[in-house]
Image: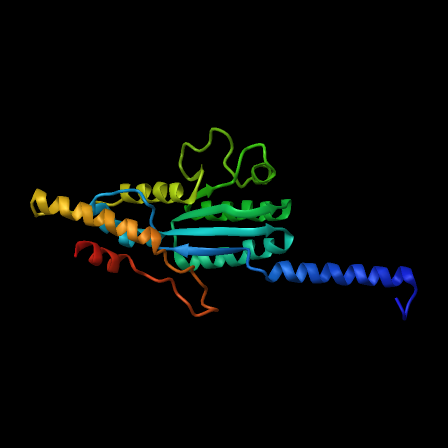
Length: 233
């Protein structure tokens, strides 16, 4: 303002603030991806053992904060790349920690869902809120959420919380898995069932670290086998 007139100085200040706002929101992490976590649903020993490996096919994308146009770039590029690296066949999009989102981010999420469905990846939406709220309406308007009456095929579902989504994905994966018959007696089978449930409860409290891309050099902590060993003892 000192070196220019008042109008020009105000215009420069507004432009600089806008650039700073865009840069800030494009750099703040809008999501984290977790892999290898399991639901708190009680399952048999054989199902629990099967989920020790099958759970790696489930990726949970936890959105957080304000999903504005700056976050749309992260959604459209980073999530697609990281999910491809993970090789997940079941993806949960969780909105429990989201404060609000705009149409640009909703459109980016819609494009993400379509790209996942093209490679036969099942998508589960978690905690998107009531139908009359802005987040639900924007996601529906931009083609992210399944239309009314079109959840029957199971490729895109809406649930109330992440644990419910995990249970749904686990059940879907277990249906595609054939378990070998146990040669041991009923008493041993009962003990194993109990150990499997204990392992799951421990795992629900000791969740793995979020997935990080190759840029950070970190990998998820894999602890289910360790927990099963503790439960059996």
